[in-house]
Length: 342
Image (cartoon, rainbow, N blue to C red; front, side, top):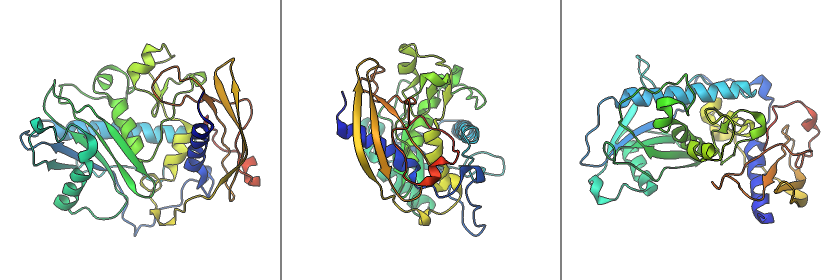
């Protein structure tokens, strides 16, 4: 059974992610100031000193970016959290994404680039080489260690709404065409690990792991387990991927999606009152009861956390509890909102 502390941490992380909204999602984020320079995700293609850039990099990265934009914008609209921008990436007149090419100072065999701990160095080099300005940038770093079987294995992403973030994943040069109009887990999209590639970008935006809710019938969640883990457990619709409402709510107020500067973001001040986790041995869940006391907030959250994680992936699998188990004390919680399973 998870500790009370870990259950509390997950509850607060979900609530804090959606806490700082001050306006109605139905109204959309406030219109960006035309004088403000829109903030966009920086795509970096990184190679060790002894690896040449393979053919077709910009084309493939454009397809990946197209898939990310189409999926995230479509899902956010479906859930009632429309983005305030029309694009996430800088593009040229031909629609191709801008790619920042960065070369390391060591060969691939040095082992220096086998782990994501060199991300700060890559970001520093890209910033200096391309004169990147501003704070809180989000970096999507593709590491190319060579053609197959060479592979950057230790994928990672981290970030938050204030400091920005980064995601570092492998670049696969295998021939084929990514289809933004198809599911992430279909055909060549699955072979290229498209779902995991965009999953790590989600972490760069500050999204936590949010496992799938099988009762929705929507398949695997973007911030849930990798497609292989999901499929081997015989969960339904393993050819589908969806964005959870909690993730959409978090993205909705991220500066890259809202088009607004992050200056207005203030860390929420909340406290948990009458906290009581209840373990149900029948379905192996922990239901959290209590009240989250905070300044006025229009979001109501509730969750049910499995005591044992059947997919064995470390991803909390969430599904609606029989009643709300956490709410804001604000009267505005009675207003209709997109519902979240976390």
